[in-house]
Image (tube, rainbow, N blue to C red; front, side, top):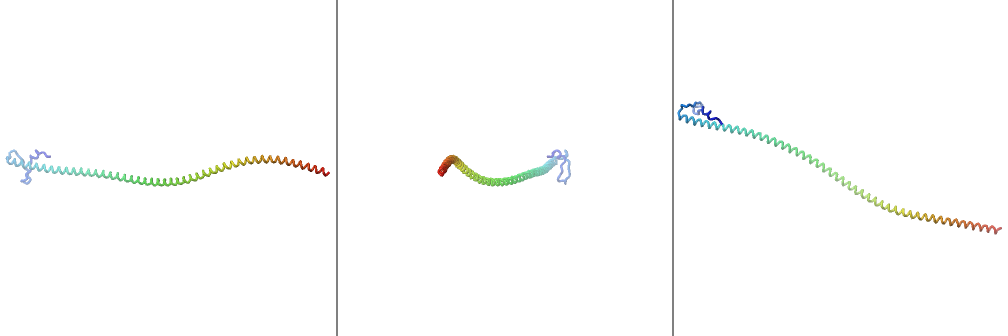
Length: 191
């Protein structure tokens, strides 16, 4: 606010058409009172004017502060929007990667299904081969036992044949000896 002592020395008069009057100590009391009241009115009006100006300045200051605050809010909102956009892009990328992974997993599951079917087929074929191998093993054992039995029979036959050959040779010898004697007897009878 303004200093009142400075304003009391010079007082503009509103009645005299903006003329300045000097306040002197020799003036009338009445004039003094009127002048004091006029000065007080002037001071009040000046104070009102200053208050208005201060209010305008304060409003301008508040306005500029509001503008600064608004700009800061806008800047923060811009940053937030940028962060949200970045998050959205990242989320879109993650969703795309998840889609790729789901397709890969589906492909792997399909391959595993095919592999399981193939494994089942292979297991069935291996089972059949093992059954055939067991049957062949049983057949080999039976053939081996038959061969061993036949080998024993062959040995027995060979020994029987050898015995028979000995007997035959003996019989042949007997026959030959008998036949030679009979020839000898017949030859002796003839002669």
